[in-house]
Length: 250
Image (tube, rainbow, N blue to C red; front, side, top):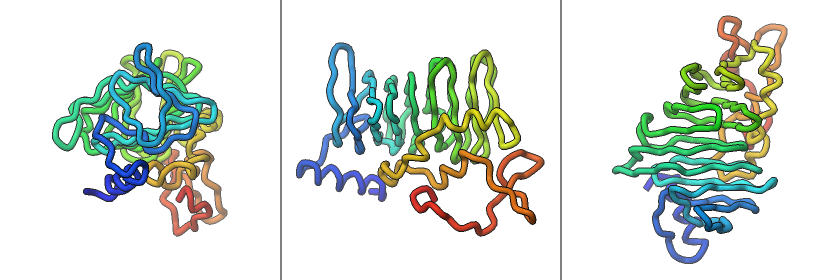
C-alpha cells in the first residue's frame, strides 16, 4: 500500500472503526455544504461517503469536497461548484475511461495511475486532454480557464486547441477560440484572479495541495541583477535559491 492509500485507510478506520467499502471514489474531505445528486435522489456528503458514476457533486458558497478515486486520482470541487462524474471504468491498477463534466465553478485535478488516454474533462465551452497533470480549472460565464502546475495538457474549443507544457501556463477558452497566456500577455492579469483555490489550499488535506501554487497567480518580482522571466518564452526562469515565505504553499 502506498503512502497516500495508507493515509486515507487510516482516516476511514478512525471514522467509524471499520474500513469503508471500495467505490469509484470517496469524499475524504468535506466542508459543508456539499451534496451528491443522482436522478431524483439527493444526499448530503460527509467524510467517508462514496461517490459513483452518474452522480453530480454540488457545493454551496462556502463548501468544498476532496475526492479520492480508486486509481489515486484526486479532485477538489471548490465552493459554489457543480461536477458530474460521467464515466469511470477501472481495469487493474488504472481506469480505462475516466470522464467528468465540470459544469460550473472551481476545481483542482491531480491525475492518478491511469493511462493518459483514459482522462477526459469537459466543460460547457471546452474539452481538456490530460497528460499526467496537476491543474486548477475555473468554469463560468461562457468561459473556461485552466492553470497548469505540473505535467502537460491540451485545452480545446472545438478544433481550436492549445498545449500547456510549462508550470504556470494558463489556457483560456472564451468566445470561439482557445488561447495560451504566458507572463508576457497583458490578458493574464485579468484572468489570474479566476484561480482562488491556491489561496485557500491550507484547508485541503496535504495530498490535495500543490507546491508553490500562489507563485503562479502574479508575475515574479524583478531584481536589478537577474530577471525571473525568460524573455524568449515569457515564462518564469528557474528559481535561484529563493527562500519560501509561505510554508502552506511551498
